[in-house]
Image (cartoon, rainbow over all chains, first blue to last red; front, top):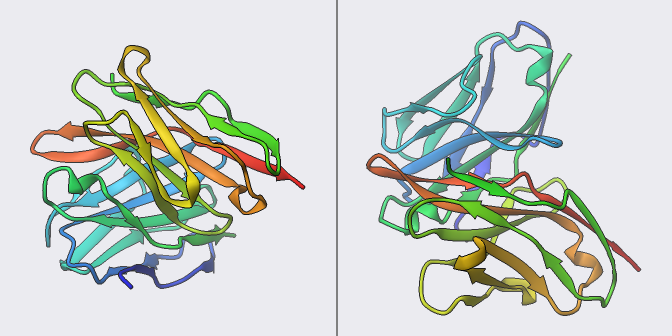
Length: 115
Length: 115
């Protein structure tokens, strides 16, 4: 069964810590995305990548960075975690072929709490 | 501007009743339209999609949606709701972003099902 795997379901980190959220997909997808989800705000795009070593800022990139050294792995980095980054983080991937690009496969999410 | 509006933040229905979730979009070109479902604590799963052709599309779990171009709508329906349908439902439109494509999301509708 094809899937997107996020390494942690729940994380608790301290303010100021550097936090790594890992996402791995086994579908050979070119496109990968990081979203955060907050009540009443829906899904907000943080960063995305259309190819290895490529990255593009989404709608709310401040306070985050990403790394994509291999096609299957897309990491989200919180350089210095803050309490306002407490959220559910969702990773998704999609193929690059036209129209099929819209068929996102999501991971189960990582619920991050920064204390 | 490209946008998706889900007018109902929260809906409660009784088990066995019919369901309609509303979705309106704003996009200048031919829209590719999607409904995703998110069960509690999980990632998002694709329910159905519309690319072209028949404006009534069938999806998984007994859901269907109808595209109405004149109303810029893509409403999701189910004739008889089951308790397991309680979840968050997201409508999305696929848009061109330069040479790439991405999804624009609605804020979601939370569905509760009374026994």
